[in-house]
Structures are given as C-alpha cells and as structure tokens.
Amino acid sequence: MKSLARRSAEHYFIQGIKIFGLVMGLQVILAFEFFLMGAEMTDMLGYIVQNVVAFTGMFMILFNTIYAIYGPNWLDSVVLSMGARRKDVFWGQIIQQLTFITGCVIVSLAICFIFDRKMLVGFTFLAAAASILAGVIGTVIGYKIKKFGKIVMMIIIMIMACLGGVVGAMAAVGKQIHISALNNGLSLTVIGVGTIIVFILLELWAYKLNSKCMVN
Amino acid sequence: MGTLSGKNIVKKYGKDTVLKNVNIDIETGKIYGLIGRNGAGKTTLLSILTAQNPATEGTVTLDGQPVWENEEALSHICYSREIPQVTMFGPNSMKVKDYLKTAKVFYKYWDEAYAKELVALFNLNPKKRVSKLSKGMLSSLTIIIALASKADITILDEPVAGLDVVAREQFYKLVIDEYAQTGRTFIISTHIIEEAASLFEKVIIIDDGQIVLQENTEELLSRAYRVSGEDTLVDKATDGFKVYHPESIGRNKVVTVLADEPVADFGDDVQVEPVALQNLFYAMCVDDRKGA
Image 1: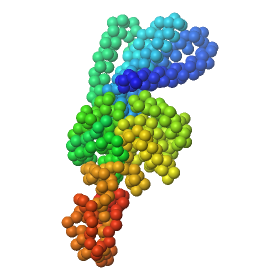
Image 2 (image 1 turned 60 degrees about the vertical axis):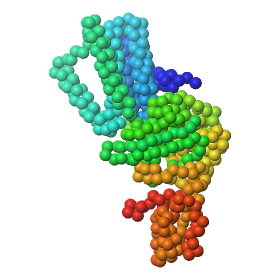
Image 3 (image 1 turned 180 degrees about the vertical axis):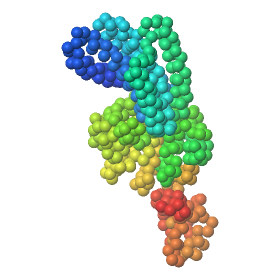
Image 4 (image 1 turned 90 degrees about the horizontal axis):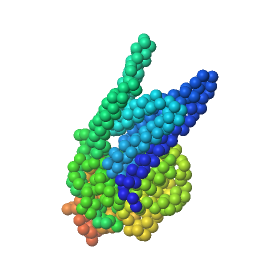
C-alpha cells in the first residue's frame, strides 16, 4: 500500500477537485443566466465572459475560505480520527486549496485567451493571490472557532460587515478604493512576493495551531 | 504486535484535570472492557492512546515506539468513535459512503469486501447522509468502520448505544468471530456491562480520571463476593477485606467484598454470593455523597 503521506495527499487532491467541480457547476448555471440577461446587449459575449471571470474570482476566494474554515472543525477531524497525522492534514489542506485555485485559474485564463479578453488576466491572478491568503486565513479562523466557538465567526462577520459598509458608503459618495494593479507590472510582482511572504507566515501560524489539535 | 502502553498520562482542560497519572498497558490479542461512569475519562483516555488528543503529560507507546505522529504505530490502531450528526456549521451532510471511502484511504489494512458485507448485514443505506441516520444506524456505521479497518488494536467507544437487542447480539458475535479468526485486540467501552461482560478477557475500570482496576475478568470475579446477613456478623466476617457499598436494611446488611485472593469461607453466619461485573463496578464506583 502507498505511504500515508501519499494517500493523504491524494485524498486532499480529490477534495480540491470536488470543490473545483462544484464551483464550475455553479459557473455553468451563472453563464446561462448571464446569457439570458445579456441577450439584448451589443457586446453580449464580452458581458458573459467578464462576469464569468469575475464570479470565478469571487468564488475562488469565497469557497476556499469556507472549506478552509470547515477543515479544523469537521472534515480534517474525520481524517484525523482515521489515523492521519497532523502533518498529513496540514499539507493536505495546502494541496486541496492549491488544487482548487489552480483549477479555477486555468479555466479563467482559458476563457480570457479563447475570447481575447487579456485585460482580465491580471484580475485572475489578483483573485488567485487573494484566494491563497483567504484560504490560510480561513484555516486559522477555523482553529480559533474550534477553540472559542461560533463567537469568532460572529466577530469576523461584524468586522466584514463594517468594512463592506465603509466601502459601500464611499462608493455612494463617489469615492472609490483602487485595489487593482493591472497597469503596473512591478506592482504585480510586489503583490506576488507579498502574497508568498504573508502566506508563509500565516501557514507557520496554522502549523502551530494544527500541531496540537484534537479530534472533535 | 506487543503492548500499547500509556505511562503517567495527565490530561488537563484548563483548570480541570481529567486524567490523573494514568498508567495502562494493553496487551495485544485480548478483548478488553473499559468501564467507567459518565465523565470518568474513558473517551479522553482512548483518544490520547490513539493520538487523537494530545496528553498534557505522559507518553504513549506501541512496542516501545511513540504513537504520536507515527505512521507505523497509527497504522495498527483504529479508534472508532461516535460520529457527530451536527457540526458547528449545521447538519453533518457527509454520506455513509463518504465515511467509508475516507476510511478506505486512511486505514492501511481496510477490508472493502468485509465492509460491504457489514453494510448489508446492518441494512445501512450508503447514500444516506449522516445527519439523517438514526442513533442505531450511527452506531452501526461506527462498528462497520472499526471491524473493516482490520487494525491490530481496534477500539470501540460505546458501540452499542442505540442498537436494539438483536443488533447488539449481532455485534457481540461479530467481535467474537473476528477475534477468533484474526486474534485482533479489541477495547470496548460500554455502559451495558452485563451483556458484554462475557466478552471481556480483561477489564479496566476507570473512575474520576484514575484507573481503579486493570485485570483478568475471571480472576477478578473469582474474588468478588456479595456478603449479606445480620450487620454485626457481616462486619465480623468481612473484617480485613476491602468492602464496597454497604447497604443496611433494618438489622440486615449487604456489602460487596473484593478480596486479594479467592476466599474459601466467610463463615456460616452470613450468606455469600458471587458478584456480577456490573454489580461490582456499581459497588466500587457509586458514592453515596454524589447520589445516583
């Protein structure tokens, strides 16, 4: 039989593929909806492509975070209760998240290049970077929820709601927050390197939390 | 396979010390019964022995090798515990087949054919979600995972909770058959002691975070007695013995005695009966100050 590390890696890889499949299923439904909504537009194709890529980016961040939070409290507990080691769970989570993100990025890039919408490539990579960070943040949040309970979720929801409110209010009064670095190659590099550094630091924290975790 | 040993195990949750310097040795090739009151520390002890929970202090080894994060040691152990129907995020939407697929991946010696046989025997629908299973079906799933894991040391934590009497008897028969065929070690934690007592080669009694007793069941019961009669005569006959749970009704008295060795005769003035494991456990663990 294959080693535990290999079996664990394969298991989490398949979980990543399943989440990817779920998101792609949602995208197919959404693409059809955009098709119906954009039926009378002059650039219907552009409308559909832009929205599909945008929603892929959003779903990448959303679903990666959700499944990362699920891990310590539910799915990883199942695996741990069946003889996996904590390091298998730690690396497995990374494999799952990167598999999911890679799948989404490949699909988005394919859409961008097939339909000649190269200006969305930068957005796709930005969303991938955000998703990578959101995943590890989700893992840390998951451990904190395991320790302190749902109150952690409530606090985070409140913070996100306040942030969302601020952004919305600023947009309402004509102010916009520019987070795009599409026009500046150097900024993309900085974002990429910054993402990796923050990712590593947060994964170290997640590793520490994981090393003493217990089965629910 | 040799011995699964826990030495000086302490487990604290905040200020509460749940396990207090527990020493335990599980020899392979036997069926153990682990019994204790609610909150005694059974599940905590089992989860520490199987590296599912870190001990605050102490070590757990299998054949001298630490169990914690050890692939080789973990491959010989299965701890099948209660599956939650509700998670922190809502109902447990995993299906029975998802659990079995995951078990197949992670248990090195998983027997898929045997698992399918057990699913049919317990009449479990693999497509059903865990949140929709009855308590008995949940117990069945726990049992299937434990038995099909084919792990050398298989631990079942209250496996018969929720099972009807027919299913319970089926389970006991399955354990005996599996033990006879493979010589696997089973550790069964249960509150339905009297039914399972005939299965237990060795019994471990845990109370208030400490192992009270850990020995061969037959030998233990051979030196346990229920002595009854007139109170002064009972006191005289049992003088020098360890006496548990004395009960007085008028001038009559009943006590449970656990001697160091089998006693030939307590005298003619008292009545002596053998004690069942459940009654011995009750006598040893009940505390009049705590009540029922």
